[in-house]
Length: 479
Image (cartoon, rainbow, N blue to C red; front, side, top):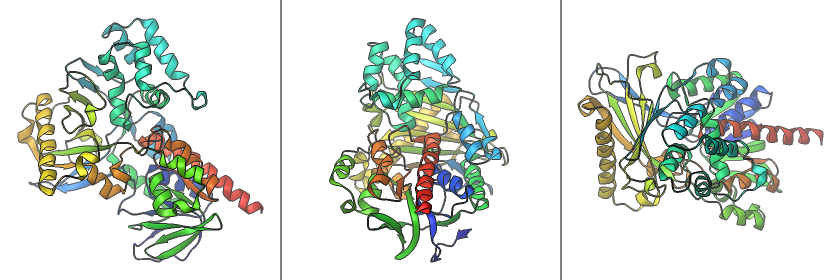
């Protein structure tokens, strides 16, 4: 059932999930379907976490613009995950994107984002011997967590494509937008994510994020999961090194276990308190780096107007060379356009929307004055429209609504530390997975370690942690 935000919940649960991102939702659904009593708590007034959307009235007519917030696109594996842990109906709405384009001073490429086509492009357009290309993809295919390789992304590209900044741009730029990777990050995190995305192309949910999350909400309720939104957890209660419940608006809700779908550092430092953990664990946690944030510009097209098909995802840049540091700067010339055509939401009147995404640093925004902040937002908007005009001439006159989101927007609505769009860097995964070894019954399923970022990574991490929670509850039952 869905509780009102004003309700004080008196029931106790097998598991309370703090935060309704895709990891928390998937964990809750699996455990509810397996017969566990589950309460899902969300501080916002929507489920989905960063997989979300918003609506704005059009200037003319009675219809509304609908904007998907996340950069659309996830691997084919999302179909299997949704079929197994959600429903066949949800899985069947996942469709492949037709076209991913790169437009920059070094090259222009259009691809279906499959391994086969990337091999062809590297060999024919970038003139890389097929033996080298095969060796590169073989290296990616054999990467795993247990080798503990210290190779970085930069070293990986230099090994196979020395001095080829253009190839680095071709291979890394989409992943920078997908999860905030840079040249200094471990190559294993890149290899696993890139292999997933390149196996059979890039996919989206037909019907829009709003439809997907609504279908997931209905599935949660059907499987007996209780839900309360606008219910921010202020504290996870610990009694004798064991979880005993959570506090919401001064009211304690009892539970045998708790899973935090919040940021791992917020979980440790704010909701639990570092005094409950060993000094070695806190030392590891303090070394965890947050990932970067992002900016987005939302552009809605007037009712009755249309735009030509120019690709589904368009990676554009005016920068002469690729730099993961520059791509984070407010002065960056790079942005990615997600273009939403009417077939994204075929159940509605024809709608077109474009979302420009660019990576960003929280520190470049937090210290701006109010006037400086508004000027920087307007710069974002103008840069997006000007860039879009180069792909769709005359589009400016067709735009009915435009607004921008910044790292501060991300922080406000998601409560992510420093507006981190992609959780933590790679070292956060170890801290996350060992949380329950510090405090009995406390688990984490938030975005960590890059590979657990994105829609598929989040959902799969929720499944992994659901097994851990279920094993813990089964041990309690045997005592």
